[in-house]
Image (cartoon, rainbow, N blue to C red):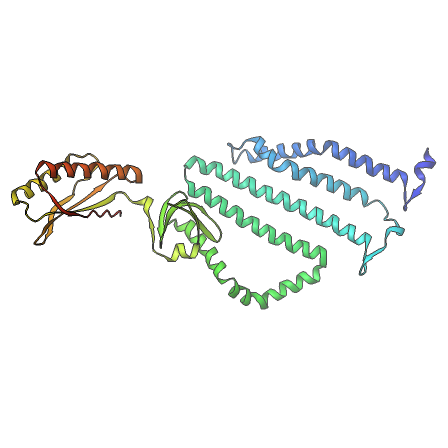
Length: 363
């Protein structure tokens, strides 16, 4: 049996292949437990900073990448003790040997697993911070976390791409790229001027907070609820339920009306009555209009009811009032209720309309 294990196949004794198989089998069997043990060990430390984090959430993020990482490291450490068969060290393409290609693939796989772990750590940190943000009931903080999660992931991808280039083409090309950035930085900045401006404006939005996720805003001709603030643009769900993407630079530079921050809503009502209406009846209408608004609990004090203008054919009555009702549907119901009250008052005093123009301005 010893002689059989000592036989050399492809430049290595058979027993070395058995050792490789046993190590991989062993690591495959314990990788879940080893990853769980390491995740639990890390969770004990993390729980001090985020007591609301569930252990299952933490383990779910890290278990899979840790398993592949341990298996890959065990494989690389084991095959390092094997001799690459000389008969397989052939030139595959343009001077690249099979040994070099396999070694490069292993380095790429290890780099990819490390990047995977780092991305999961970023996800976990954002989850940990979002748990604290949920306690404050602030949607902007949650969007702020999503923003920086994507930002740091983009940085990881950039460094990962540089690492891949170094593995595939060597450090010389990476050095040339870095050296070339000094020359091409101006051209790159000029080409990416709009993107850089939008990125800077996204930071301005998060720190200055002119609006938050969930706010209803109006910018230029677009009005709707803010659903997401991204690295380059802000997504708005319009009143027509369309999804509009507005560059962050426009959100910062344009005059933006944050409708959600208004404390009251203003309504302007203009009513034209017939020019042959008696002055006494007109005065009674104005008095009843005032009484109606004064008795209404949803109309703020300081309303205006007056004879705003008149011509040879009409008298123009103007009504301006403020209300604490902000939402669209309740506000429209309130207007309908008050308008019906005005119509009844006109009927009670026998006042006829020459023409009726109603203008509602919401500010």
